[in-house]
Length: 204
Image 1 (cartoon, rainbow, N blue to C red):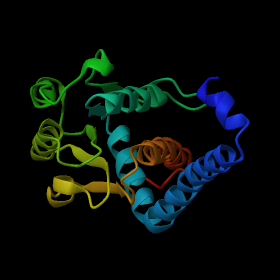
Image 2: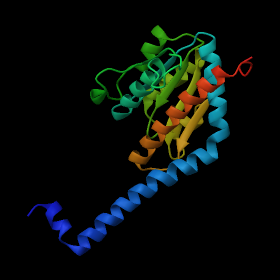
Image 3: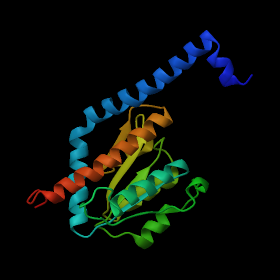
């Protein structure tokens, strides 16, 4: 009998499975709730700053290593191809290809120096906040005048000490909960940026 069959006929196994599922749901709800309650004001400030950059012709440039590269691609697609009819497309790109193969050796700094302009926005993803190439790219971007945002977890690692314009740290060491909350965060960023565009005078 396979493991699933064993669990389905074993009372103790069912209890363990129920506890596992309950714990996962709890983390998936309480961690985002804690984060957004604490960071609502700074998220609004970040969206206002991003909208101002877009208004001046800036672009969103996103990057991350490994699995986090898929989030960089996801957020860039959200801005370029809005899922809500009537929302304007905003320029964005991800400095990633073959995201599952990306490693810390990826030279995002070199790409930024070639592609970025001072009015752009740099958005870097890192679970630990200590990944050297992501930190270097964000530091370079800040020196070039870009608006810089770092999405990470826990206490933020080196991101928190780098003087970024905005560093958002998800209060968890659970990579699944962190990535889920990052995804919700950049959907919120997208939505609020559009709200600023849709209300005349907010960006003046």
